[in-house]
Image (cartoon, rainbow, N blue to C red; front, side, top):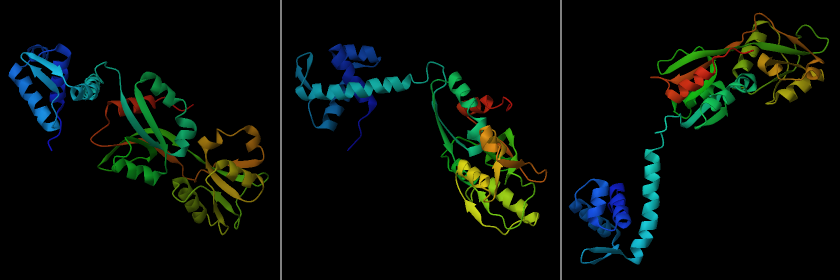
Length: 286
């Protein structure tokens, strides 16, 4: 069965709205014979007469009235789609994936600014770990990622966003790490966890259980209780209340690797909406 064509529906609706084939052809700027041919094709395709033909008049059949209700909705929607981007204001659905640290401090003041400048854009903001973000970018599941960088990949482009430091959290009164202490960390696909585990190994400090807890509040509570230590991004610490930090000791070792966070996209480059979003990220973190 041949599919319906939008031109057939447009000609059918034009005949209904103007009353004659000649008037419809003038409205559509085409010859009358073309309209007549399209109407016949449409009726053959549907296996149903849409008009009762009386001399020079075309009268809708009951079936034709039903079809016109449905066809008019399709034609009107097609016209709306044609005009979707005609106003000149940015429109689209932008999907952005980000590390949790970006969502904690960096994006809360930037996303509202972006949406204010582009009210016609729908944004989908997802939180994912580094490895997942890279895969989603390659597979085209997201348009942009805020993840660890810099990125050196022939299929990827990137721009610096902000720098993230890592802090070691110790029970109150403890100033140095001790072998055998329990460690409370995020999931194994967390890049900062890998940095901290490598740092512990290089320093010869370890031997304790490593607990995987995907909640910074729970991690902090365990450290407060003197059950072990942890490593938390500075941006997460900055969101905690003062009383939450008063019962722990926070250290920033110079040799503990942090991370630069980059806006990353697929090459050959960002589209207009992606570029607008990256431009909105450029204000320095306070």
